[in-house]
Length: 177
Image (cartoon, rainbow, N blue to C red; front, side, top):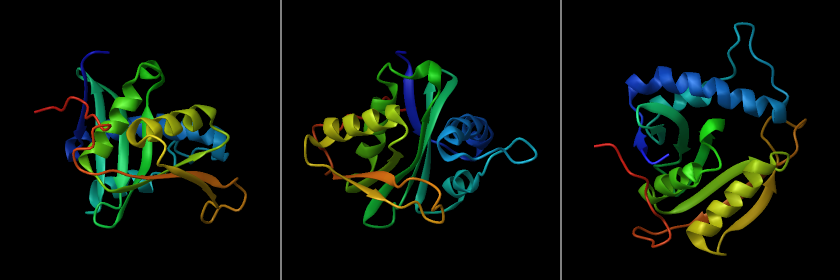
């Protein structure tokens, strides 16, 4: 996976991101108990907000000309950025791709960060703790918060950390021109 790139997605990338979104929501349905809508789709308000709201940014991760993941960031106009959604297709996992993408996104938006995940998702638990450690050493924190409007779900785990522009531990992924 040597031809990995991360770029801000544009409106022309939305159909590709929508297809990746279905895979992401399918993975998450195991944790959240969500079933598809009658048409086979899943909840997608975050997908649409990522492409339409000014304080959000959708990113597309590719290997050559093949889409392999996405990330949605919110809070760009406020004091805290939030990794709203993050997904790497299974065939591209465990090769450092997700780490490079996460570092690249954080490098583009220095400041306070928060990232949520579920304790029931052991891959995410390990991954996000490793990301926070790679980026900030041991200066990150972790807490559990209830999921809004979902008392049936276990609390989310939230990791918080801060970065500054030019931080030596934040290495961007190759970017498209």
